[in-house]
Length: 453
Image 1 (spheres, rainbow, N blue to C red):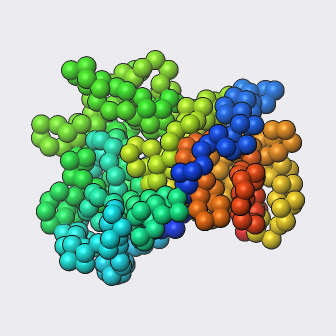
Image 2 (spheres, rainbow, N blue to C red):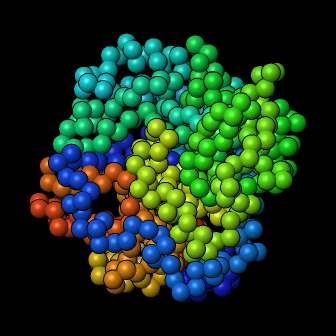
């Protein structure tokens, strides 16, 4: 069915969200206690089929998808955030922003020590970050990686004392962290904060407040070069590139797309005029390839292995990835656009609902319909990449903080390969709390066929 359609090419083939995320750690449990992590090979290459260089989709369809990727990537420069559509995964339009921020201003937040964050201090932050829905859009570009925040405030705030303290082993989930922007990412810049230190801005996948120092306005000449040049994508992770003084300028992440000329990448910097300029930087050998990379199991396994073992980072904090950032960067390598958060990613392309299926039926559907390296498995708050069968069980690659246990969480805290019964052996595991118990859909980002909703 879908497996054949994708392989034949007949059909083409993350702010306010996730305040309650499913993953959280329990310090008493370590990764070595997970039977799955010891049993399943921790390498994408271990799951390669007999023909690892066979295309998962044909080149023509992949090129069409890559063209759509670039349209969405550059959408902030085309005024699409102003056209009445939703702003990233918030499902907000500009006319609803004042109401949205007013509701957030009434929330009770908690400081890192567990105490209630003073209302007076919150009011000052809200006032500093008043969004002006009528502000003119200006094109800009990220010149460094930076957090995207709900409010123009760089310190973490939490929704509960439990979250602030990590009580019961739960992840200290910063309620103000929306996502991160990468160097070279196009932005739509709107108004500045009252203290002039922050911009309210939109990328192709997220909206919120970013530090002014991480952004440069983009002029027409810069935009023309950036849009029209050939594109390359990073196929290694944490790629270091030197500046003019041979100092490391930044560490760039796998899946990042840059314009390129004759093997050199065009990296944005702030020019003497204050506007963005593009400078040529040559990455280390083998770090970048023409965009999109051919979507084969071998190339897919290479991308997986580049991210294997990376520590978990909610909302991209500290330059790390959470579950949906990992899947987004993975598919970006192949020119496949995904939204930022896991729920929206599960709606990309076509989808098979598993809500009404038994555990046995879910396993059967995944095995029958799942396309290794090209299928996402979703549960509320979490997304995983299907790798195929190992020892008769579905194997998944995912970056997760941990699994539920009675009274807390058992920590994983990194990108791993597991089965869908991860943590089953842990004493005190609540009933119906395994991954296989909670998954509700599989989806196929490379297709547009409406299968079942």
